Length: 378
Image 1 (tube, rainbow, N blue to C red):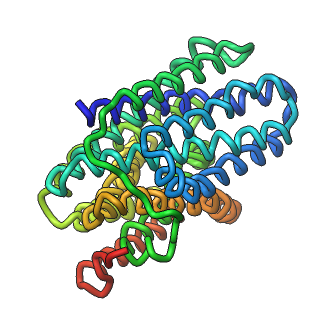
Image 2 (image 1 turned 180 degrees about the horizontal axis):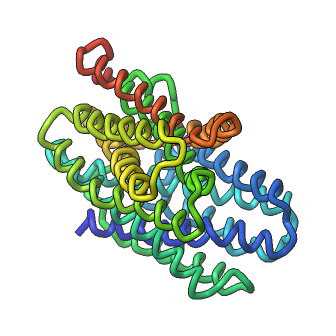
Image 3 (image 1 turned 30 degrees about the vertical axis):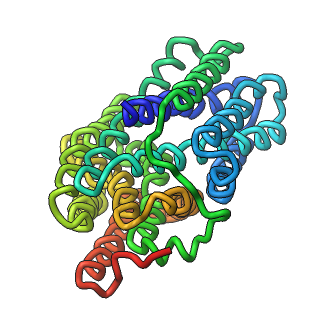
């Protein structure tokens, strides 16, 4: 029951994220913002994901995890409902920064709570279930935008409403394990405590943000029409949905680093297949996209599970904060680097992902040969 409440609370919050992901750029365009304004606003939003991890440990230490979730929801809510009141790019950037900080806190607190409620034998499957629910919630957010459109207050009110509902569900969930936290985030200590998970989250942020931001651009540059681009991205997401649970199940039955290695190798194979072909045939592109999504996108849940395998309950908020911080650092830089490579070659995106996950595979192989320790205590 506790696990269901935790997953339900974050899934509701993620419906709002799904709504805002589409609503912000479309509504901004409708009120006259330029693409440069929209890109700037998006960058400031992700900067909030860098700030949130610094706030989480002292906030949980001061008010407890349940009330901290309510504070996070309040910040996220404030970054949604007031947007239509201030139709200016600078104001939107400031408001989206607040929202990004709140949503980063929601991620950290939900993942710390889930990890506190499960042992290592079931951690991979539980976090895979959490990731499946997350993706379903993000897709639901797209349906909400399709139903309500991007004009007027209605989509902002609905997004705000589900954030409030998320906070209510979380406050009514009797989390059994306490989550005391250190008073501050110490990134270098988190890196020492979970070196493979932390470096993996940086690489995941570099790769996932690049794939979401530039996947459609790569597909179009490869000669696909609009319908084919949509089908290609659907294949990417379908691959992620179908491999999330099997990889989680596998990670609970072997050294978790080996399961992550399977996903990394799959990403490298798919990236090579797409990157070495000038204009891959559409069926080949669909297969490549499916394998790419199936190898790359499930890895975040496995990395979070790995980072928490050796953590005690009083370390989980700091570990979770460090991993979200590592992801956000990668997510801010990844699309810029991938876009620069795509200026050189239209195949830049798959080649970029191939290089990233070749590095990830080498890190995992070094860890499995014990050249990188699994963990050291905080």
